[in-house]
Length: 131
Image 1 (tube, rainbow, N blue to C red):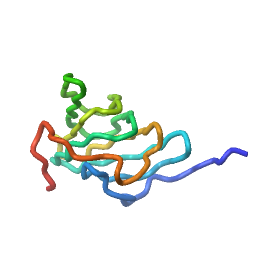
Image 2 (cartoon, rainbow, N blue to C red):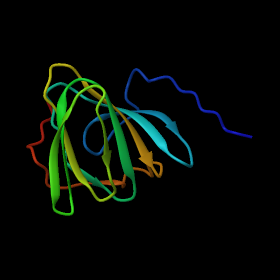
Image 3 (cartoon, rainbow, N blue to C red):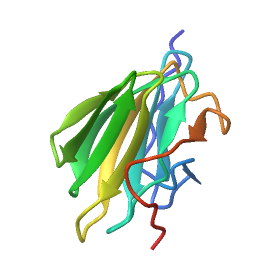
């Protein structure tokens, strides 16, 4: 029998991600996990790398940039609604909100997010801000 999941987008974050962004869990099963991430206006996240998951993003609101770096290849990409991107396993990344509105992303993790030790801080492109 399939295990159907139906969850509303939570008003308040379920947790704070290792990069400092707000996380609202959408669905999570044995195959994948999906979450809604929010980076408040004018914030710069902590640069991180994942230990075991690849991540796939779709930007749903706001504007900003993401820096991704792996195996000697680095790039900065503009984030705006409708942009989708990959963060392959082993990629260092950091994102920033350059606007006055929250920057929001739907992120898919394959395999599912395993827990607090999944991401670790790395040197990033920008100085981190928390306000």
